[in-house]
Amino acid sequence: MARKMALAAVGRDCPGIVSAVSRVLFQHGCNLEDSSMTILRGEFAMILIVAVPQESSLDALRSDLERAADHLQLVLSFRELPDTQREPTGPGGLPYILSVYGADHPGIVARVTELLANNNINITDVNTRVVGGKEPVYIMLLEVEVPERLSPDVLSDMLSRLAQELRVEITFRPLETANL
Image 1 (cartoon, rainbow, N blue to C red):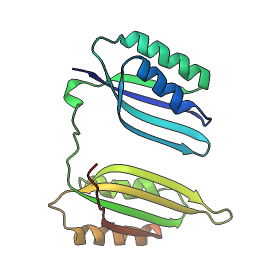
Image 2: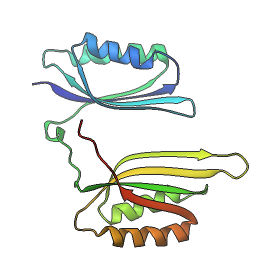
Image 3: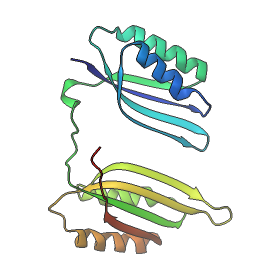
């Protein structure tokens, strides 16, 4: 059975980052299972969950990954996941999309995510952007899992009150999922 590893890398965006990291993983017989990769203001960030064959040397894999990271000037984090973390551990629930739009100011992320955490709502994905020049607009899109016991109407009311406090617009709708 393969060991699971979490790998994260961040650095100035340039062509070849995904190729270099995935080439090292392939050369060591690893399988790339889950990933998230993006560019944020010129910085490339990747988070990977990788299956590493039992017979592969973790020291050799780490050394080769560090060599590729050094060449590309990436900051690298690499760790083995415990057997108990092989399956998702979140509370589960119904998938929803939450959108937040408004004038950019401190506290938007903290207040919205605090409301979600206080209601045992698991955040599964977050994307934020500031757009515009003179009067920047903050945009935050969250995918969340809402516990079945929490009424969408009750949550919608809580989000409406928070939106008024923060002077932003918050929309909340079910997420249509596709089975891959």
